[in-house]
Image 1 (tube, one colour):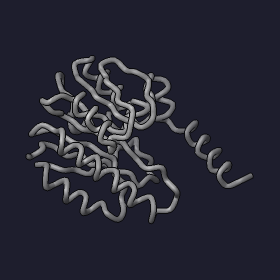
Image 2: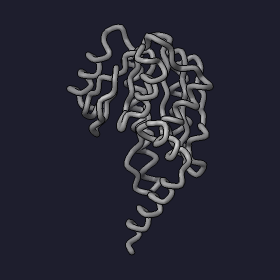
Image 3: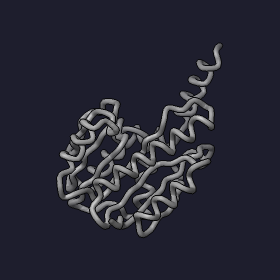
Image 4: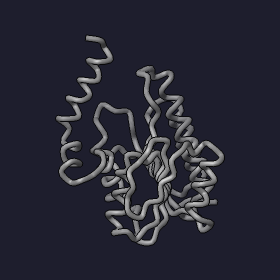
Length: 207
């Protein structure tokens, strides 16, 4: 059996045993990632009725699903991803790469001139298994997400993003601190213990 096939089988077996995967299926969520946002939100109280939210790297849609379900439709959500995403109530989906100027303009038009209250990003690069390649890619993506947040957030808005521990994370956190009043790095219980992923929660955007 090839290493790739064995790795895929191992991943599938782990998925089937994962309690968060089982909970997501039971509760009708699109992916286990919803519990990471839920656990962050329970501690940080990110969501409030009437907010405008931008979801970067949204597919399959569990984070947008969580926002619209928790706020019972009392929110405007714009979601963007290169991959397709099934529709959700109260969510406007833009398919494409937000690095593309045309897609970026679509996103800006969709959120409106009043700006955004929360930018959230669960984007991760396609990994190669080579940390020397994967880590710079992940930092590049979160830097792009931060740039988007700075362009669309209202004063006082919030930013949540996934970032991987390793080279480049400390300068990135310092960069975020230059634009937000309070910055915290969290590892939700739903993040797998062996994963280097953490979540940066930045509150109260300062222009």
